[in-house]
Length: 185
Image (tube, rainbow, N blue to C red):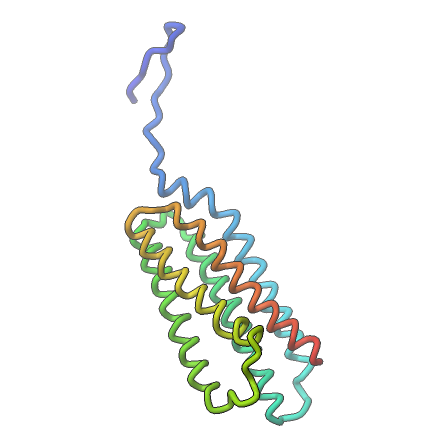
């Protein structure tokens, strides 16, 4: 190891510069670990609220509850996956970028599929809050995942801060949907 002189005449072993990408990921790991844990806990609570409906009616309202639960589960699952992606040891920028782009694309495709299925039954809907909760915030999260993935691929790790908004959007919509299911019980 190379040594450099100290001002007092001694020497110390120089430390090679820390790769900033690895350091950035290491700095984010506690956040994403907590997010993954919270998401897994919320999935468990979602299953509890769904179990309250287990033996109840099989009407159209049950189908609506299932659809709401499916959206919540999807939101929580994506938050969990984002957290797990950041916990992969020795992650490289390309691997992180691909994972985020794949997650964003998959979530976006799922949203489009859900919206197309909901179109025939959309009569009577149209409340701005419902539309925002059901489609706008999850779409924002999907676009955010894509943008952050592209920026990480370009070497801009500062873009990881954008994932805080993505996680917040997914957790808020998933939690709100789960709350609606619980209140209906």
